[in-house]
Image (tube, rainbow, N blue to C red; front, side, top):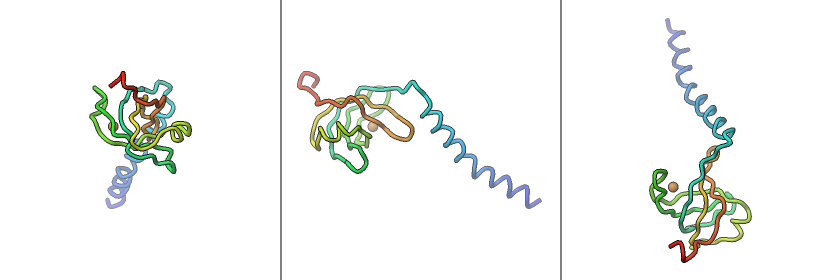
Length: 110
Ligand SMILES: [Cu+2]
């Protein structure tokens, strides 16, 4: 009687990890990554993580306004600094939030 109970508990404990791994795989394989326009201000440049911390405006239907970390490419990392107002395209890629097509926010868009 003891052994089956233990086996069941172990199985239950392992299941969420297995499901999470499968979810990540599916997300990475998916060719159709949803991208959403974003406007915000860089609050800090995190070069060692190839990321910006960005205080972004609400993205209607996707995300409320908040400050969060976005992975960016090397060119964006070099081109911008804390305090810069930017626009970009955000998406979820695997475990990361990614910001692409990063540009200075222009006065016309404000
Ligand atoms: Cu956010």
